[in-house]
Length: 155
Ligand SMILES: [Zn+2]
Figure 1 (cartoon, rainbow, N blue to C red):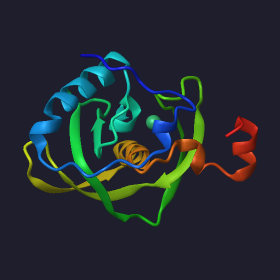
Figure 2: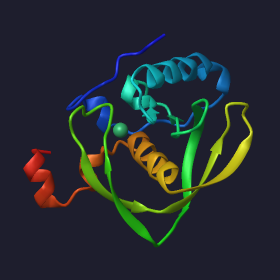
Figure 3: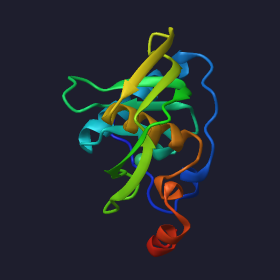
């Protein structure tokens, strides 16, 4: 089922998500989030973007066959080296922001099978995961801008 994506100033986008306990209760949500991400041709989606305050992100890296979920993802290390790149967000259609993020990260999470995993990401996948992990912490990408730029965008 394709879910409605919460947009713009919807307060749910500024709320922190809660840790998932027990995967059975979120399987349907994960399936629906994947369908929603594909239908919107996005590369990442966090549960808060569909109004669910749960620590779940779906990522769909360019070139990959299928999207996958990370449950309770936590960034455990970030490279000192950062770069700038333009980002979009399904919750803010039309906004393309130049954001500075770490080039490499390591993430601890649960897989969809409930296994504890540690994954390393670099380049675009690292950027996508950082954007989505921000979402589950109640941060939208405007908060990564300088004060002056935020004012310009009226955020
Ligand atoms: Zn986003």
